[in-house]
Length: 87
Figure 1 (cartoon, rainbow, N blue to C red):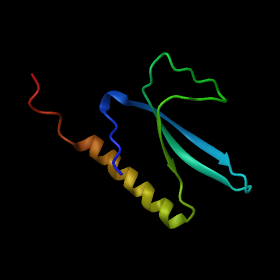
Figure 2: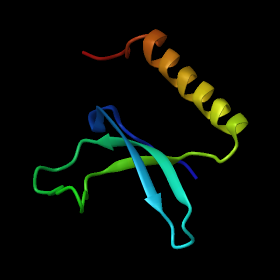
Figure 3: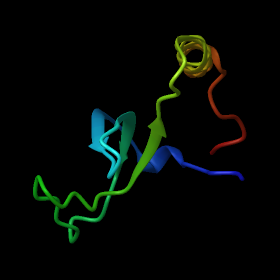
Figure 4: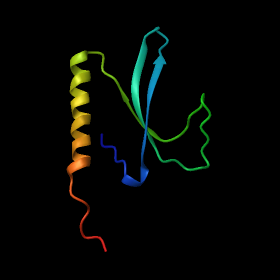
């Protein structure tokens, strides 16, 4: 699976999501909110904005590995050269 998020869709809004399943287990996620049309509404109980949701792994080791991956993404954002070939 490949998911493309274009720079025009990026925002700095990140939220913590928690959802309880029908088994009583509560799952947690980090959600990156994307730019959405002004026509979409997002009341607290029915947030229909565009987002990318990363559900957290159960094991501490996998959580640390994912955190390291996101740190690498942040590093790339900071050091990658600007776009070239633009007029």
